[in-house]
Image 1 (cartoon, helix red, strand yellow):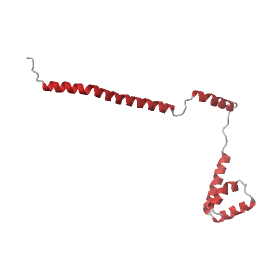
Image 2 (cartoon, rainbow, N blue to C red):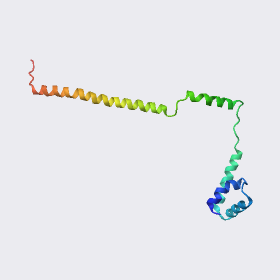
Image 3 (spheres, helix red, strand yellow):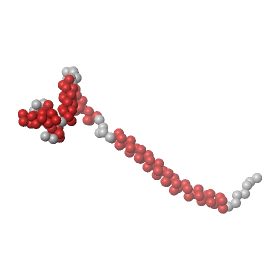
Length: 129
């Protein structure tokens, strides 16, 4: 057997779910393959850790409270991303209005000032003493 074939079967080998012939082939491969033996050792370690894991104690009525909260929550909670979308829309609106204000102000204010400045420079001004 090749390593990839053995590694696909190691979980079932460890749980004793393989037929006797497949188990013998996996065992024969493990005798000669250090990498697959290490993978099996890692799986045994993980299985031992999972067997030591103890589920937390839960008070009575927890399932009913959690289910009640789950059924009520969607009506009260905004869809994910709506807060960011609203903030980004507000920022874009402010930037657009600022840009438009400058463009409009530029159009209305620069020409009259240029005309006034040019006419003032063209006519001599006599000081009043």
